[in-house]
Length: 125
Image (cartoon, rainbow, N blue to C red):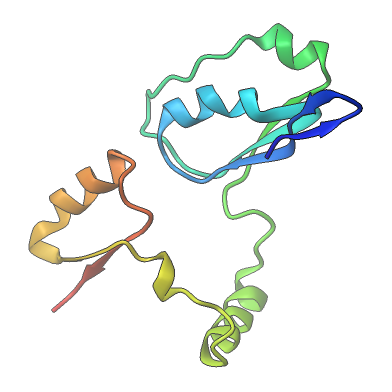
């Protein structure tokens, strides 16, 4: 993430927060370079609070931006991703951290909220 340029520590141009844990947003700005951007992808629970010093962002030209599904066009992108998966080029199985039966959905939700899960899948049997 950070590298040295001219003897000075340089952070990341972008920090993409994919977990839904508010503390991750609090920490994200620490890793940014001047002019860097925090991209908020993960969805913390409603009411979850992150803290950062706003003046620090302005002083070094940093920004935060939200991204809910990015620029996805469902009619175009889903068939494309299905095709990539069928070809073995999109490794979705590696993203799954747990499989839960429907009667264990509350445990799956808690696992996700805790930040320990990458992605949980609910199995309907």
